[in-house]
Structures are given as C-alpha cells and as structure tokens.
Amino acid sequence: MEGRAVVVGVGESPYYKRGGASESEFQLACIAIRNAVEDAGLTMADVDGFASYMDRNEPVRLSNALGTGDLHFTGQTFGGGGNGTAAAVALADMAVSAGYAECVVVFRSLAQGQFHRYGQAGKSRRAGGSAAYTAPYGMLSAAQICAMQTTRWMYDHGVTQDSLAEVALACFAHAQHNPRAVRYGSPLTREEYHASRWIAEPFHLYDCCPENDGAAAIVVTTAERARDCAQPGVPIVAAAQGLAHRGGGAAFTEAGFPTAHYDLVARQLWNRAGVKPADVPVAQFYENFTGPVLMAIAEMGFCEPGEINDFVANGGIQLGGRLPINTSGGNLAEAYIHGFGCVVEAVRQMRGSSTCQVEGADLSLVVAGPGFAPGSAVLFGRDS
Amino acid sequence: MTTTASGPLPDDWTLPRLGRVNTEWFTSGKLLIQTCNACGTRQHPPEEICHQCGSMDLAHTELGANGTVHSFTVAHYAVNRALADAVPYAVVLVALDDDPSIRIVGNVIDADPGEVHIGMPVRATWVERSDENGTVLLPQWVSR
Image (cartoon, rainbow over all chains, first blue to last red; front, top):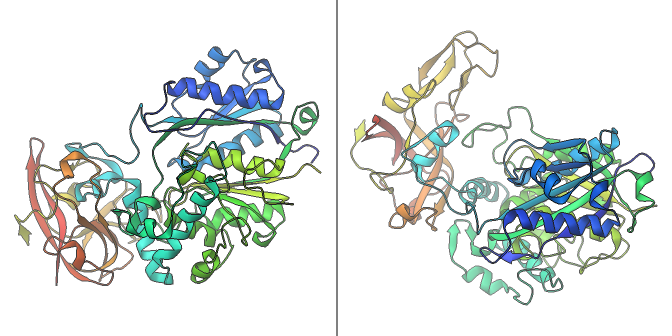
C-alpha cells in the first residue's frame, strides 16, 4: 500500500430527522470533522485540505473556525449532487497521492430542516435552462426524475415492484443493528412497504430517501503518515468518476436512457483496481431511490439487468447474502447525509467495526448517487 | 393545433423562460427540432452549438406530430403547495414517431393518470398560456 492514500479517521455528528438538530448545519460539519480527526489520533493543526460536493460550508470558514493548519488544497465536484460522494473521496486521494496536501478532510453536512428540502420544489413564474423542458409539466423533484428512468428500466427488463422493495427491506433490516440509525428500532415489513403511499410511481414512500439533519467526515492521508495514527489505515484501492459520451443530455435525452450513469464508472474502477465485481464481498449503494440502486448494481457488473430480480431476492443483498449492501442502514434507514454515511460505513467494514460486519471482507465498495451524472465510485481495501 | 384545455396543472403554473435557443420551440406551435445547417444533425433540447460538428449555424426541421409514450411517472406527492389539487398527475416522456431518438417531456392532457402507459400512441397539441412576460404555446399531448 506504499504511496497510496489511506483513510485514517471517520466521524459523524448525531443523525436527526429533518428539523431535529439543535446545532446549525455548520456546527454539525464541525462536530463530524472534529470526530474524524480525533478518531485518527490527529490534531486539527494536522489538517491541510478539504474536499466535498455541493456543500454550503466553505473550507475558508471551517479552517478558521476549527483552527486547521495551513490549507494546501480545497476541491469540490461538479454536476448533480450525491453522485459526487465518491468523487469527493477521489479528490482527496489525488491531492494526497500527488503530494499537494498531506491530510485532507472529506465531508458533507446537510441540515434539510434548516435549508431547502430536497423533496420539495419552489414555484417560479418562468423556468430556464433544462428545467424549461420539465418544470412546466410538473416534473420537478429527484423522485420524479428517477421514477421516469426506473419505469422504463423495469419495463425493459421485467423488474418487479418486489425487487424495489428488497432494497428498502435490506436497509431497514441492517439499521436495526445500528444505534446511530434514525430508523433503529423501527423495522419495516414487506407488507408495510407495499401498503405505504405512492410518492411518484413506481416509488412508494419507502423507496425514497428521507430528509435528515447531520454531517459525516473522513480523514485521508499518506500511507507513511498513517503508520503513526490511532487507527489502521484503510487504503483507497481505486476510485472513478464518469460521464459517458453524450451521456449528459437534458430532460431525459441522454444517450443510453434509462441509465444510472455507472457503466463507464464500472469499467474504470475494475480496471484500476484489478479486481472484478465477484471479488467484492460488501457494498454501499447510495439510495436516492430504490430503482436507481438496482440499475447501479447491474451497471457495476454484479449481474445482468434481466437477472436483478433473482439477485436481490431471498436476502441476496442482506447480511449473509451474496452481496450485502448498505450495512449501516444506508441513506434510507441510517440517515440521508447526502450519501456520506455510506463512505463512513464502507471504511468501518474494512476496520471490522460495522454493526453488520461482513466477516473476512477485504474489499469494500461505495457507489455514489445513481441517475445523475457524472457517477462516481470508490473501492477501499484492507491494510496488509 | 392549439387548445385552451390546460391539462392537469394549475393555469398559473410555471412557464418556460424563453431565451437564445428555445423561443421557436415554445412559440411556433410546431415540433421544430433544432437542425445543424452545416452537417444536418438534429438535437433536442436545442443548444447553442451543434454537438456533432461544433457549428453554431443552427436552424430547425419540422417533424410529424405523432409520438409514443416511452416512459412516465404518476406524481402523487405534491412537491409544491400549488400542486396540491393537481395530484395525482402523470408526466410522460414521448419519443417522436418520425425520430424516436428525440424525446420530449409533457402531459397527456385528455387522459387520466391511470390510462397512461408505455407504448401509448399520442399526438402533439399546443396549449396557449400567458403571463406578464408574454405568451407561449406549450407543447403537450393528446391520446390518439
């Protein structure tokens, strides 16, 4: 693992239901970052870089408020939202591996109780840009966008509503072991899933990520520096970001519709890592909605689209199954911190400290937000 | 063909903002697809540059009004208070029969949400709508 960037710290704020946080979003960011730095056995003066995606909490303010060392790197990704979750980790990997910075915090803080709710949309007199082709028709939310993609994908490949349910059921089952999870102590049955109200067909309530308040962070540093840290370093084996040729068309005109935008990410990630999907024993798939998770599982190469019903059935994506996913409860049942909880959980799987630990796991995958481009993914390994 | 039937959304709901490349699409009452004068490539939505050859000399080609529902969703949750009485409503993605690579978002204004399905044959119509910024002819769909 010489010369490879490694994760040495993870941290979270408490996770709340929307509106439940007494702390401000900025304070939540500070708490998560402080916890991650402390977890690593480092001090704030060691931190010299920040990376994130779509975050309001500026590194300039964070650096000053937290008392970091001199900053050598800041970076944020372009495009969409949660699809940048793993790409932000890649930014830290690049900065550290190339020697621009030595100790980069990757973080995301999101208090939907204090700012815009992702499940709602404003009403404007006139909508411009790509929204001119969608908003006048009532196509406004991420749920509706992903529903349009999922409806066609289900039709093309014979995917059942029960397969969508499997994603929610896996998340809620895993959350029952995780005291940090907002849905800890609130299990979900298949009957409750099917009986829950529609949000945007084919999505029921439980197909949709909730709105939460919270923050999560990791600390990325060099393998050399990691040797002096409190925790065993978790190497970043490979990361990838991708937008396919003509894949960014507005209003569902992208090449390959319907796509989760993960074919290209998969090709790059598996090539760089020198492993194949079958080698991966545990994965965190960012759930904005259940349907795009199924699309991403197939596009990452774990099965053909036509095999997805069988792949997820009978506990296939739960602990003990062929590919346990979202072992903390994920966005659906742990908390929706714009997917960064998935990164923290993937690192915990490599430390052996998940509340749904996959025994003997030596690789741990994070697939960021599906259905929006560019997609991104990161693969963690074990300190050898 | 234009109509005054407004479809499932409120009469004062959001309209498209007209700009450099989309005015013909939203005011002509025709399916005018942006076409490159240099290489003949069609692209939708319109852009400021041809994605095939890079030319900025762009015109339009009128395509036939028939299309087929390629995908859809039925919105049950009102993401804005102003849509509380409009839900449930269907939003469709229509592929044009003349060129199925051209896909257009809209509503089937004469169908109930439960009637909308993939493969449903539809025909373009135009809904005239105005506000203080002017009038648009919003492309919409009726069943056929």
